[in-house]
Length: 263
Image 1 (cartoon, helix red, strand yellow):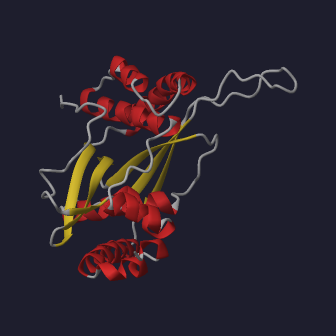
Image 2 (tube, rainbow, N blue to C red):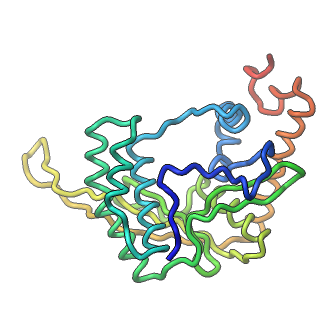
Image 3 (cartoon, one colour):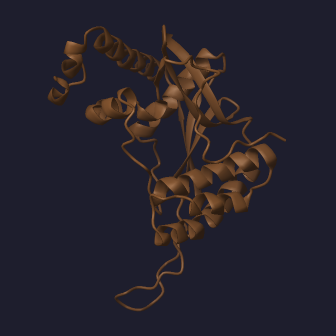
């Protein structure tokens, strides 16, 4: 049986990344293109731009259920409720909504794991040094066989049948790190866990609406050579942008494509 760290534990990677080194977060890869200003503020300046909402907190609860079941074959329900109650970024109604959701969603995920197999790795902190003192690293959800798995909660009753780019780039980054560690990851998989949408009454007709109980929908994609070339090149682009900006601060606004950074 493996030990579990507290739910609110913040991974500092002190055993993987030296103090003072720069870390590229896999979850921020897509943001480097879509929101350079916010990427710079969060990744370079260390600003806390987002405290969380009911969806991200629900996601943390469902991830914890997966980790707990994979590592211990059990779930500490008291721990999860206490985690929800202590969240200051949401109100009481949101907390009650999460409490109504995490149990059926978590059970659906456990049922899926029982049928399709228990991953060998879960919530593993990994890192790789791209350039001297520049690392890419994060915490991967799970690995089963040669497949990297990421659990995502969704409010869609019919989840996407493909992996959206903002998630795909994140998963490819983890796959890249694992390959550098010697683990041959050949597939990436999103495991969608849908919200439990039941017992609704139509405001218009007063009649019961169709139920959509929580379900699990896995979507798997093969990693191509082009995928690996792209993600390695993109990680190097991010790293070299950071290094060039550090070397030439006057070019920061050009490198990050934002005139607000000129001064």
